[in-house]
Amino acid sequence: MADDVLTAAARPQHRLDDSAITWRQFPGYEGLYFWVLGVNETRQKVDLYFRLLPGARCPSHRHVGPTDTLVVEGEHRTWARVGDKWELDQVRPPGFFGANEGDHLHSEEGGEEGAIVLLSMTAVDDVIWETFDDAGDLVDTATLSDFARVLSKQ
Image 1 (cartoon, rainbow, N blue to C red):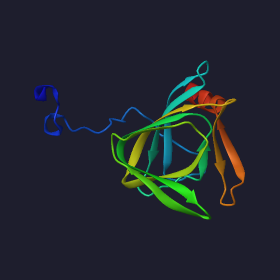
Image 2: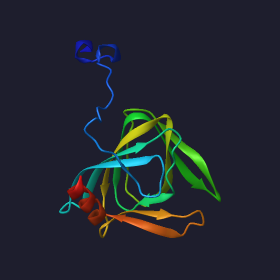
Image 3: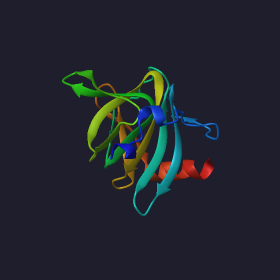
Image 4: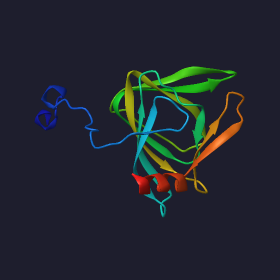
């Protein structure tokens, strides 16, 4: 059985070749970029690469529906609200896979080398996520329709 295992030493060491990707900056957020891979309106799904430059942190938000996360490259850090302050919740290395059912308030940050994360998100009533300000007030929503428009322009 040991012959069926591919050891780390036997695996080629590559990074994601993103030379064909024209990363789009999230409007108003320096160091945060994305590339839409697909939008499926029937299934209410958006798949995208999310790129965070080293130390870049996104505002607090919650994915409304189920979301799967795969760290493709770098270190992906998540922050959770504890009382009135934010605390480091997880440090996710390449290959980390996580899934949640939605309605999870958090913030995300790129590690020392930044991060590229694959997000597979499900909309609820067309809403993918909601963004909040420091006071906890809703300031923006990202919708399935928004990502469909971006995909048509890529």
